[in-house]
Length: 226
Image (cartoon, rainbow, N blue to C red; front, side, top):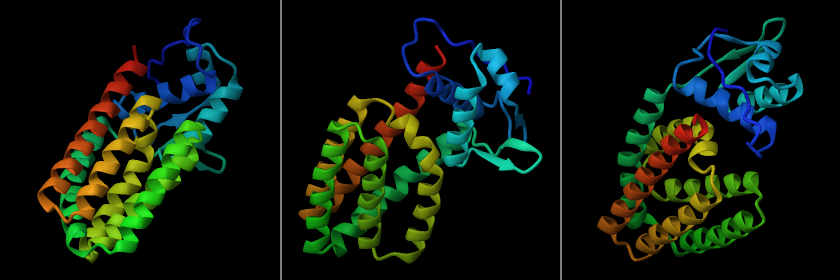
């Protein structure tokens, strides 16, 4: 692995495993570490001037997010997704999610709206308690309800594929606590528009939400590399 990785800064107060994880993820996204490359613990530890333990933990997290696969007797290999891939995924998501909420406006039930509002309350609680994994679970439930409400099987298949990619991007786009709080408010506005069956407003809000998520994703990658 020839990628240039920055040593951990002494004044960076984040957990070392988090710093290593974000730096490796950034390197994968911007192409410094390419698909098919081996991620060798001791080499990464040496380049970043850390012990092997946080590197091992970071590699496990990358594997959990689908960016790395662990092959017996070969070790961790980059599965990868580039910055260009991420940009294209967000652009597709913006258009398709706009269509998704328009269709949800036409087909949603009172039960759908009730469940969505319940989820938003639970998401707020998860953010307040800083339970990030719980927040992501609820986020998936939120998307699943609206997607199901669209009643469009082809769209559902396409969005499920996009959301699978987004699993590895959300930890960056929703990296800051402030962004999570704002995202919930954006979700609430979208649910209100769906409740009123306002297709134009729902699509506008959904596309705006995706644009903000995309901006947050790239801003956080730049910040992680400063």
